[in-house]
Length: 344
Picture 1 (cartoon, helix red, strand yellow):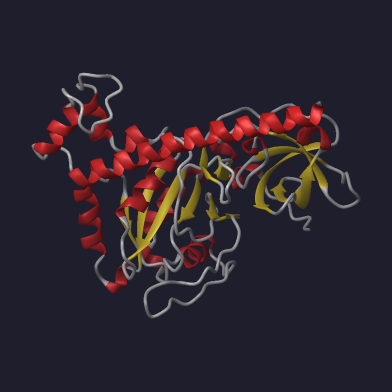
Picture 2 (cartoon, helix red, strand yellow):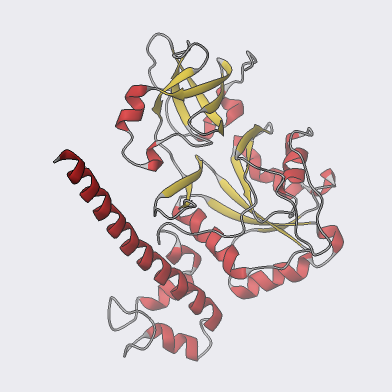
């Protein structure tokens, strides 16, 4: 790839919160900037290189989340292990991650990005706002230890303040920023998300202007952008997750997502905190907040202290997680049976 060297602090190491790990001879540290099928692109003080997971590391990976993802810090060899690609020896512990259910029929997790400080959920004033999808993004961020922020792009078209008010009334209690990706002078609030060398990941539907926003933040035309159709839908111009240096900070661009399947309930109580707080007063600790006697949540919903639409969204996500848990259990049982049959 390239021999151009990038200091770790330019890649966000200062936000890692840990000491530089001891390295053996022929070892270095880098950050995953692109993930391919079975291969990766690294950037760091040793330069920019292609890499693959070393055999020893591959054998120790028991779960899909054990494999490197964009944003991971890794210890790698300084010399190739297969003629041209470096070997990834260790994935350093993550301080945060954006996790979702992977596409496909198997119930397995996928790490969308690692060591992220802020997840910027990008909306557009010329597209319909899906509050339920936004709540899924928020739950995913909170569940992985990432601070979410909502970025309303194309504010020059009007309607940005109305969307902000709609989200506030909905119960969203996170930063809501209005911007125009085509006007650099209007990116001030978004640029602040990169303060201190932070890692900002941008996500959202196609056509909201993520790639244009990334190009402005990075200061160069590094990502292709596409037009938006007359119905407001946009083309998928980002086809892979990619980490780019913005100086200060780094930006991770992600492909447009039409849906987000959450992986667990770790962020539910934080996003729906008004429901979680009231639920502490329910008569039963395992209250489903539907028709049980002594349910404080349904009472709060009846007297308008809790939005009925928010409760419907919360219960739907709880049900989805419960079904996913059952699906995972069945899947793991099937996998064990297959392994046992092969060993007999």
